[in-house]
Amino acid sequence: MTGKPARRPTKKQIWLLILIVLLAAVTVVGIQLLSSERQPLPEAIEALTSDEQVQVEEEPWLTFVPVQRIPDTGFIFYPGGRIDPRGYAHLMKAIAAEGYLAIVPEMPLNIAAFRPSIADKIVAAHPEIDRWVISGHSVGGAMAAQYTHTRSENIAGLVIWASYPPDNADLAGLGIPVTLIYGSREPRVTDSSVAERQHLLPADTVFVRIEGGDHHQFGSYEIDPKDHLATISRDSQQQQILEATLSLLETVSTTTGD
Image 1 (tube, rainbow, N blue to C red):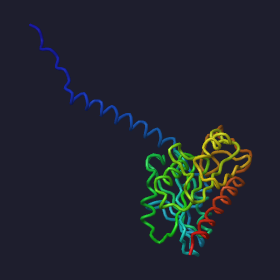
Image 2 (image 1 turned 120 degrees about the vertical axis):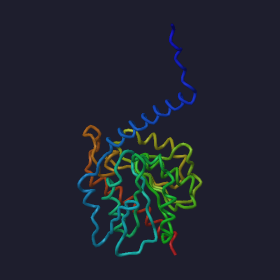
Image 3 (image 1 turned 90 degrees about the vertical axis):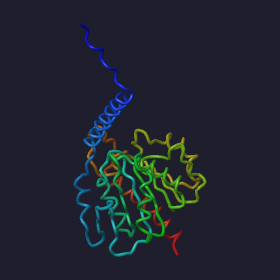
C-alpha cells in the first residue's frame, strides 16, 4: 500500500507563514534598534530636574517650560536617529530658560522618519502658543524640514542641526527665517552636500559652520569613541549651536509678535 500524498499548503497558509516571517524580522530589527539606542550622558540626565527657571515634564512629551515668563513662542525638536530624546535635555533646558516652550517628542524606535507629523499633536495641545519654530538633529532635522514643507501654516521658523532638507522638501518659496547649523568635522553634512541642497532653502537662509564641530556634539549622549571627530569641546560647540538657534527664535518672537 502507498501512503496518502502530502497535502500542498493552501494560499492562505502560505500567506500566513510569510506574515509570521515578516513579523519576526520586524521584531528582530526593532530589538536591534532599541539595543543600540544612544543613552544620555550625566549632564543631560541632570538637566531633567526642574529648577527656579525651568519646569521639566516627561509626559506626554519631554517638555521644558519657562517658569519666570509665560511663553508665546514654542520650539519643537525632533531627535536624531536612535538617540534617546533625553540626550538633548541640556540644550532644551537652556532654550527654555530664555523664555521659550521647548518640546522633544519620543519617536517610534527613536527614528523621526516613523512619525514626522507628530508636531501636529504638539501644536494642537498648546493653543496658548502663538508661533512655533521647529528643529531637529540629523534625520530629525530632515524630518523637521519635511514637516515645514507639508505644514508651513503651522511653522514660523526652522532650524536644521547637522542635516539638510530632503530632495522633495522645497522650502525656497517660504517667507520664514531658516538657519542650518553643521560642524566642519561632519562626515556627511559637509560644505559640498549643503551647497548641493541650497536651492531647496530660502535665499536668506543663515548657514552656521562650526569649526571643529562634529555630528554627535549636537547632543549629549553616549557614542562609540571612534565616532568622536570633534576638535573642540562639547561645551564650545553647544554654545555656538544655542547662540544660532536662539538668534532665530528671537527673530521669530520679535518680528511676528504683537
